[in-house]
Length: 121
Image 1 (cartoon, rainbow, N blue to C red):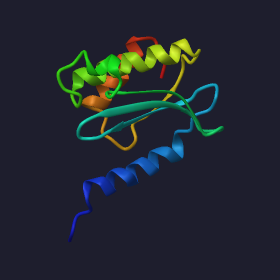
Image 2: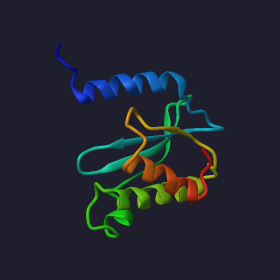
Image 3: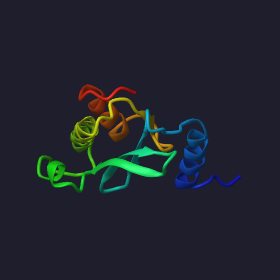
């Protein structure tokens, strides 16, 4: 029996998670995407279909402070930067959407750094 590609399995898992996780204006969704080189995160209001806050390892605030961009250290900086931007816009409570990724490594580091910076999940 042939196994499905890991990217297809992640998309299926993400679809299953998105059925349950919905962001509203009162509690928007914090969505994480990770590529081989970078990590991206955004806070989204699904009712209006708007991105409220975004950050990535491509931002100058994160890029200059770490040696690489696809590592746990840069994900921690990204989480604290995103939380600070969200708190500046008056967003203090979010729903975490791991986008089908396992909760470890960069995804976990981003989430824990955002919590420590003041966001409530």
